[in-house]
Image (cartoon, rainbow, N blue to C red):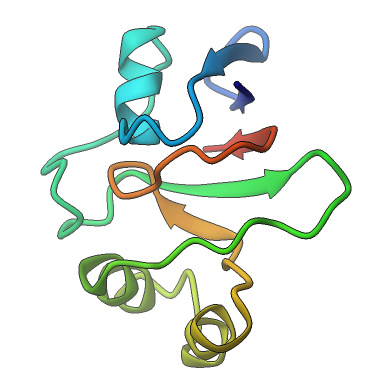
Length: 115
């Protein structure tokens, strides 16, 4: 199980939910299931409207997560990540701080999601 804490100025308080690690549900679907008001449009990784900042709360190095090609393109076009961050993610398994909620699969680690 992983604790996912959503925080946003749009919410009156932070919301922490449990997510089953590796169940292939995206962070967007976890948010929708728990009525977290996360913005989205296409749900397909092409528009970039569900961009979120993800921080690992455990104090450990984050678990490497492969970025999809759609996610790389959408986040780079939006100016959220740089090519060097993409290269670092691919070479050293260090995920960038910005992700797309519709592409991010929850791993076995507690995370803070800012939007």
